[in-house]
Image 1 (cartoon, rainbow, N blue to C red):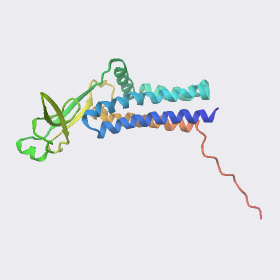
Image 2: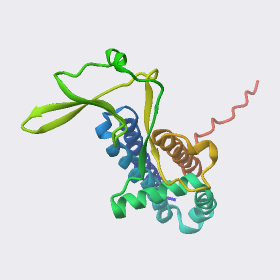
Image 3: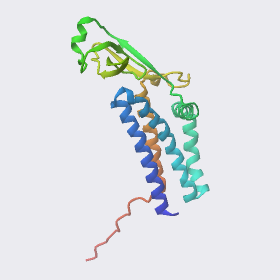
Image 4: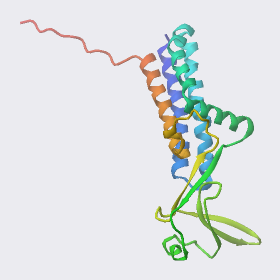
Length: 217
């Protein structure tokens, strides 16, 4: 087995997974207008992790790779969440479609609650909660009929707005069905992280054992 080529292939898989995790970071903490870009990175680069790992087949040999990978592949195909993310990526690649919706729960909101909110940088024309990006904030008039959204964080005492996947298949476990997009993406990437760890364990040499020394008096 070509160890150098194996190390390089696994390093590429790590880089692809890191890019998917960067997408998750944007999805969780970025401006709401950037959330779709973060999700796209999770879907595209997350799926690519398995493609890159399969490049090892030409390095370690088809028989050895398939003997190790085929059972893991069967597990992933049987995993409803993994299957859903594959389909979501296919919908994105082939149709440009992101299957997300906005879920909002408003605890209470009245005129007095505006005092609790971050103020816009200049006069606003309206306030919105839960747009297509899952964000809330102020609509600002730039003049000439042009407007822009100024996103702010909403206190949980007022309500919570989050993005969810719509059209989840019935075989998705109940404990996962009510989770947000970023929570499910975190679980998905965690499963890919476990796959990459298993790949390293299988194909990378372990630490060399220290020689056993016997002292003779």
